[in-house]
Length: 196
Ligand code: HEM
Image (cartoon, rainbow, N blue to C red):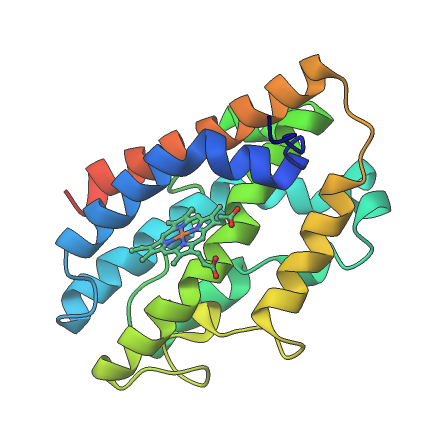
């Protein structure tokens, strides 16, 4: 028998969220966000809603201890600048109450939510290229999709290395997977509202 190596935390989250991610990816692409600026505007609003949901995560002292560059990982400001670049009004303050589940998350749940936010920056490589069709780039309109200066993959590994090193109980791992699934569900909800 071939011995199986247990999955790392990040691999387990990827496996646990594979089908919801694939469904999300198809739903977003079906809305043709890069076919015209009006569609891209709705995509930006969707991104704004999700990143507003998770804004509280970037204020957490427990996450900051694990990720010293926590604050720099936030992309909400870039999304707001992208909206402004396209003369799209940013949603009014308080337009959407942030997701309570993200605000009240335990640390393992918060790690699951954070996994989804950070991972979305990997797939953003494809979206960034597609945004060039609309004449958008890291200086205008697609700032929040741009790669990190040190490289997307390296930046992602900074997160997964930290995640994989966490001593989590089986119950913690379940909570983390539940956090990731809740985050994806929340993005599906925004797609229902804005792109469906
Ligand atoms: C049309 C939209 C999307 C496409 C085409 C897409 C595509 C991809 C691709 C190709 C990867 C793998 C990148 C790599 O391994 O180098 C990826 C990773 C990931 N994406 Fe998406 N994505 C999309 C939207 C999203 C959204 C909206 C979210 C969540 C808010 C998300 C969450 C993730 C996560 C968590 C990963 C990391 C998976 C892992 O553990 O390796 N994606 N995406």
